[in-house]
Image (cartoon, rainbow over all chains, first blue to last red; front, side, top):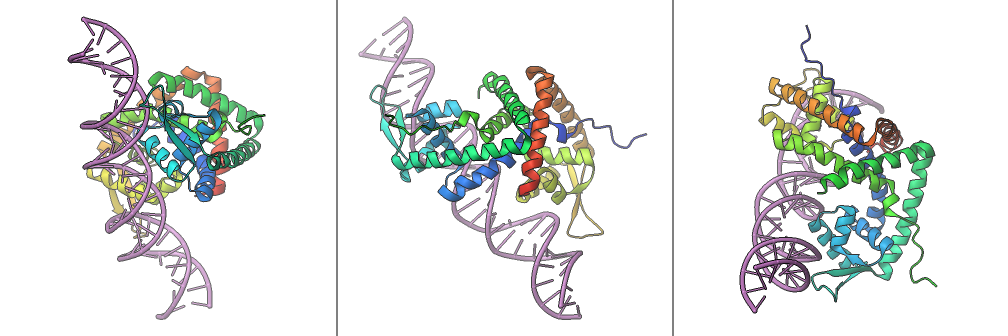
Length: 153
Length: 153
DNA sequence: AGTTATTTGTTGCAAATGCAACTATGTCAA
DNA sequence: TTGACATAGTTGCATTTGCAACAAATAACT
């Protein structure tokens, strides 16, 4: 007889666990860059990345796109404004909304960090091999589509 | 002429971002289960999963294996003990260490949640297809190996 | 032995977080 | 117009978090 019921469940093969581990390790590497060199948090960097990529938009839009909690976004925006990386302007067509836009300084940071990001990404692809990297991207997108849109938090 | 320097950097194709998005969405689904039904946090569940899978071990070992911050682990262990899911015992060979072990109740939770986890996992594989799922696992392990062991935070 | 460094686990404290409540604005329909 | 509801963004508050400082035990040198 066994003194422990056969587990069968192995954390090391559990996808949510693997995803979190991978995300944490990989993110940390890049986070160190924008944290150390520009004093940005992850949320702040994401807000800037969205504005840099897509141009002026509201905080709510950024929240929808990047699934950032609205309180978090609000605070990130306030800090980014305080540091001169973005400006806010009441939208004329809907005065609840605030249109956010990067300042010169903000765009500069976005460009620099973007370049770093791409280098980081290239390094990742080299480390695990391009095919694996492509397959990974494909799988992640599939997951996000399957769970992200379904639950829609 | 363009008024914005060509960005080139796209957040939507940035691997750290994709990883975080996928991890967040997927984890949330399963987290709802152990949170709602057993009142466990993610860290608490991880501690239990490690103990259930590998048997008695110290908090520090769990931290090393699962890359959990030690303060977090300490607090999770205290709460799990308070709820009767595990016991702590000073190790006789090294009196700094505390050997943690699941109680009957704790093992019971582990078994039940493990079953739920496997079902969740099977559902994920079905949703995105078994090949994609396998490729995803392969890629994630490669990333963890490349970054997890190298940086070793 | 004696001194210094390392490891294990806990705690203090400031900062970050999430949820709910709130203001202000806009929409829809009776 | 009025009233019910929805959306954008902020703030209050209790909880969680992480870092640094700590205590206790052990290891590693000399």
